[in-house]
Length: 144
Image (cartoon, rainbow, N blue to C red; front, side, top):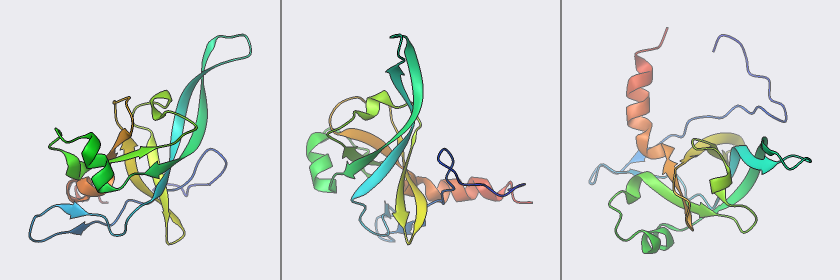
């Protein structure tokens, strides 16, 4: 980066995950099971006058076990690149598409997911770890 990031209540540095690839199936599997994550982003709401407004918010999500998620999405053939998560307090549909989901790994914020477009329970997120080989391949072309 050209300048260091200054963490504050609105900005936190995050790392990309380190994937582990199963050499038999070629699928990316998590380094360790993730049980929770923090969804942050712009959330739709209303101001004091009742006018629609957007607020920068965050909520902790419970990440569902693979089997639990698979029960909900049996007809889906894209289970390896998604994960399911939810919270009783807020619906992730209220957050902007593309909002990041992070998790603390070894004391550092790691990007684990990105909010997808669906709005049913449990909510589905893109699993960043799955796409790390593609991300790293494409980042190499921009190295100084």
